[in-house]
Image (cartoon, rainbow, N blue to C red; front, side, top):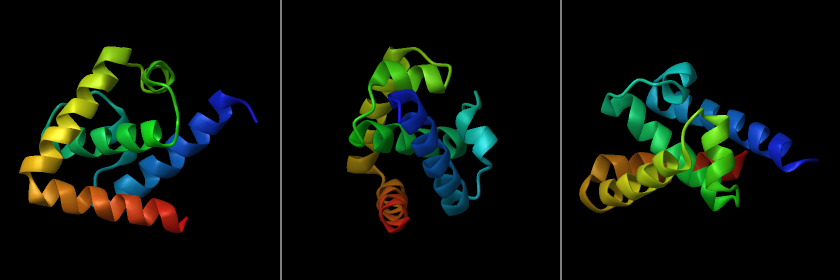
Amino acid sequence: MSDQTKLKEDAIAILKAASLLTGVPAKRIHGRFYRPENTHPRYMVWVILTQRGHELVDIGTAFDREMGTIRSGGKRHEELMEGDWEYRKDFEMLENAIRLT
């Protein structure tokens, strides 16, 4: 299986799980909607894809974003993990849901 195929499969599975967890449609998570209810799940998806070994540039291509945008999302994720208990709880729930699939 190619890296791009694996990335696509991972992204779809994680997007679906994030959508179910947050109640935000996957299209809005993947899209260019800039409200926190859309961006927060997006950051979570990007971070999990990174944790699974996918390259920032490839994640950017899959989400029609620049690599720097993915990196910035990762930095914002770190900030939210430190300062937003709800975000941290949602991220941990998403990680656990992904592990179970």
